[in-house]
Amino acid sequence: MKYESQKVAYWYILAALALFGIQVLGGLLAGWVYVSPNFLSELLPFNVIRMIHTNALIVWLLLGFFAAAYFLVPEESEREIWSPKLAYLQLIILLVGTLGAVGSYLVGIHGGREFLEQPLWVKFGILVAAVIFLVNISMTVLSGKRTAITNVLLMGLWLLSLLWVFAFINPDNLSLDKMYWWFVVHLWVEATWELVMAAILAFLLLKLTGVDREVVEKWLYVIVATALFSGILGTGHHFYWIGLPGYWQWVGSIFSTFEVIPFFLMMSFAFVMVWKGRKNHPNKAALLWSLGSSTVAFFGAGVWGFLHTLHGVNFYSHGTQITAAHGHLAFYGAYVALNLAVFTYAMPMLRQRAPYNQVLNMASFWLMTGGMAFMTFVLTFAGTIQTHMQRVVGDYYMDVQDSLSVFYLMRFGAGAAVVIGALLFIYSMLVVRRREVIAPGPANPVPGE
Image 1: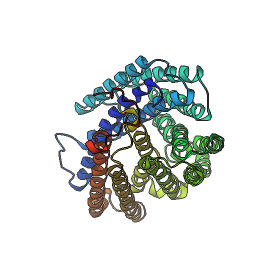
Image 2 (image 1 turned 135 degrees about the vertical axis):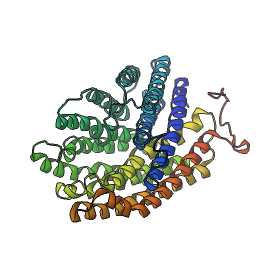
Image 3 (image 1 turned 60 degrees about the horizontal axis):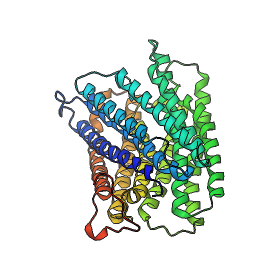
Image 4 (image 1 turned 180 degrees about the horizontal axis):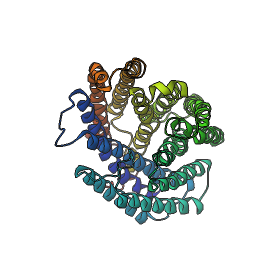
């Protein structure tokens, strides 16, 4: 760790790991409700469990992005963070908003829009935190050295924050409501978040492989161009059946087909960088997560997204378990695994230690990735059967759900593997065995100790 202010990232990582644990446990609980529908139905209804599961996911991923920015920007800009105090204030606002949102959900107060259920005051809190972050990071970059990585990262984070404004627009017309809703949800995960992913992945591979910066930057700009080209008009694949004009069926189908390209490029980029790399970096676990993220993202976001993105297919498959299969694998590969790669790389340096617990860390990777892959296959088969029985044959929804019970049981088993892997990862990050404590340089006080 070169700069003292990078320690800000440590506290963001701790907060993200806590929410990560809550998120996967909430997902496991939701998975069990599919097996036993009346479980906790009065004490903790399924809609509340689902809100906690999805909202915790979004918040901890954002915390991970912020942690990555506060860690890599000082190194790239070759200067300290403009204001560490503002960074801590931002974290406090986000945590207060998160706790306030969960408390509101538990007593039945929410906005009713999936992913955007937060009460209005929480939405404003998130906006304030985003503005603080943008000012802090932008001032750091503008007053220091500028690189392609910081340029792309800033572009992604600025667009991400600006798109949050659409979360406040909630028209009475349902078609307009869903259109603005997708402006946030789709343009986050399938456009601006991809820029953030590409920048963070480029930074990790630059550090882990030792490839020349010029090579990394050329790949990065090509990935960014394809992500924006395909992602913006690719929003149209969400406009098929919400009352918008029919031409969106063609626009959405054509540009959604191109959305596979940036993820294929990111996977190719990762493996080519490792192949060309000259550095034998000691942190093998971080490299595994980096390669795993780009690979799983290609299959989850790219291949599984393409499976049901054409309007002729989507007419039948829309809203089935096929959507759930795609969503789980895409989020895990593109953003969950990427954040865990950053944490794996940064934490040893933030705690002034050589990479530790790497075997446990890599075991957690295979547990989570294997569990998520199995869950994806199970939900894909379940969704295929559901599509035929419900949309082609015309059976009643609940009758179809009963026939899918064996798939839901297998999905729960896969979810249990993911939770065990997640807890193992958290342990590998925070608990250091005495014999593995290695101080490569002069020991400074470890944050939190």
